Image (cartoon, rainbow, N blue to C red):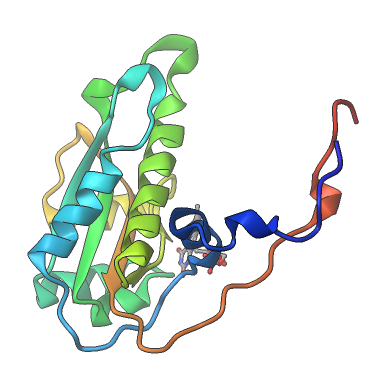
Length: 185
Ligand SMILES: Cc1cc2nc3c(=O)[nH]c(=O)nc-3n(C[C@H](O)[C@H](O)[C@H](O)COP(=O)(O)O)c2cc1C
């Protein structure tokens, strides 16, 4: 099988495919508000994600109170942009839906899948967001629990501030054929 270094031409005008390639992390937002319809659309995409044994072990906290956004920005070392975002989604794991025994870490993969859907959906509707890390750092989990009143059965996983991008940025080219292996290493 020959794998091309360029994107095969027939996919260049495929909107869904190009949305994946053009998504970037957005950390600066304009003042334009994000509507409840847009948040709803993003959450529908989030809940369409795949999950192990279809457990859907996710819960979403939509934060749009400026005071809370500022407190979250102050509590998290790499999420300062949250103070200037119109809205943020805190993706949480619902422990009561986690699998037991050998599969007990699958929830991290499930929450990663839903988080990527959030980023892709935001980009698809003209917004931008960035995955900012909470889990597995206890020093980030604890203050987020306090600020948002999150009970023990939920684990705050990440925080995704979302807004209209202040400026357009080109995506980086991450294509690296050296990372592709065929059949055996
Ligand atoms: C697990 C994970 C944790 C991340 N944590 C942060 C973070 O705390 N703060 C931040 O600004 N960006 C964070 N990012 C975003 C990455 O920095 C970003 O995806 C990467 O630099 C590639 O850039 P791109 O998203 O524009 O392609 C995180 C991304 C992932 C997947």
